[in-house]
Image 1 (cartoon, rainbow, N blue to C red):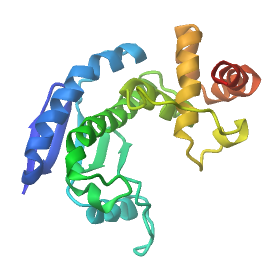
Image 2 (image 1 turned 90 degrees about the horizontal axis):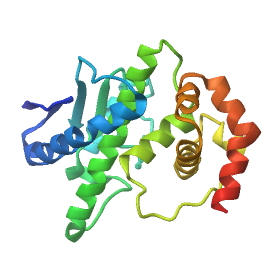
Image 3 (image 1 turned 135 degrees about the horizontal axis):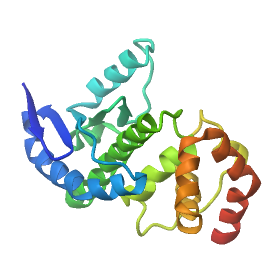
Length: 225
């Protein structure tokens, strides 16, 4: 039986065995939402985000195969546990991480829960980024910024030592994923460039790519070397 919980900015849909988990998630999203809206300089959307918590990895994988029109025997990566599209976030329950590459020992549950909340916030940031794009009637944000801002504002890398390892060409390859590098580049951008220019980059893929190639990558690399 699917249950619902409506918070200030998101509606959760979930199975009954995840109801205790949802209380923590909803409070966490509500407490951080305004700083996300403030970064993108938009008002709280009238429509709330929808967050579907899928109980098992098997069901999540089937969702991915169906929505992405993949073959029924396509092997969904074990690390893939969440996505955001058109205002809907679909995410695997923490209670079935044992069937993913993110599995953890029971004595690490509290630590895993704190990180899990940040990864849900990561997807909520993608939702707000989508709202920003609709308001400005612009194309999707360049991938390194889209993922970079989600890792930066979610706080999921707080306290971690991150290195810049990818090349410019790798970062601009939209078929690959270099989250550490996206994070560092976006962090340097936000903390060292004018905010109005930063938001222009979020609206313009060509500008984002041009800036990365001409100066942003080299400056980030020099700063974090």
